Amino acid sequence: MDLRLGDKTVFITGASGGIGRALARVFGAERARLILHAGRNAARLRQWLADQPFVRRATVVEADVTRPAEVQRAFDAGLRATGRIDACVVNAGIWPPQRANLHEMDEERIRAVLDVNLLGALWTCRAFLRVLAQSGPRPDGDGAAIVLIGSTAGRFGERGHCEYAVSKAGLHGLLLTLKNEIVDLDPCGRVNLVEPGWTRTAMTDEPLGDDETLRAVVATMPLRQIATAEDVARIVAAVASPAVSRHVSGQVLTIAGGMEGRLRWQAEEIDVNEVRKRSEPGR
Image 1 (spheres, one colour):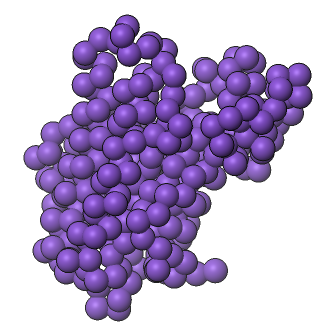
Image 2 (tube, one colour; image 1 turned 60 degrees about the vertical axis):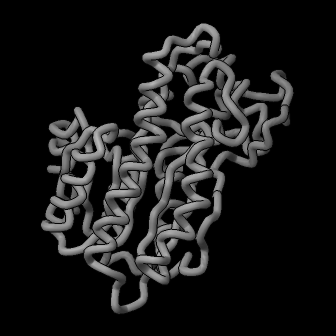
């Protein structure tokens, strides 16, 4: 199916990470023009991009998402390079792997996570809406799209990661507000939230390498497997697509194997080797 992304420009934040690169590959395969954002890892992103088949349709921009002026400059640079920006995937985020209950957590960690994951998302959306206000809606009626990348932690909470759960829960408020505001700039504009559960990336390789942790994770899922970054990216592309999702806005799509926030399997029912086999990229 043609997602009608081939003539669109997509701005992806956090494009140097596992999900970010998968997003670039999926949107690149749809022949979209790409503006790929990175912070401290911009050089590494450029090196990776050089070997990708869509390199000539991609521009790398740098910004600290906690600094609104830098975010705005990145969008302005992307607009100058491509003429317009049609979709924005708000993907940049951090997750400190160390578990700590709230009473044990230091102020620096709390502020850092909220600054990147919640305020960074807000600054990103503001910058995108500002360039949309400059360019106006597309004459063909294919509306602008924002796709926020949340987490099941924002729905169910995550013990030992309270600050992360709060940062992702805040995206629900951003979603429900911006779906009403974007139509002031583009009557066909849409805002949606994709909410992954545990996903195989470099950030999660260490905790998911522990058998006990893996059993605890999949115990809440009817589908006893871990999402790949491509699983997430393909859904994001469909949500951003004006062909597939033209009448979808203000919605939360959870990619978590049917997770319900309750135990679905007992530990003895979970074969960790089979889980890892089913969770390999490319399946």
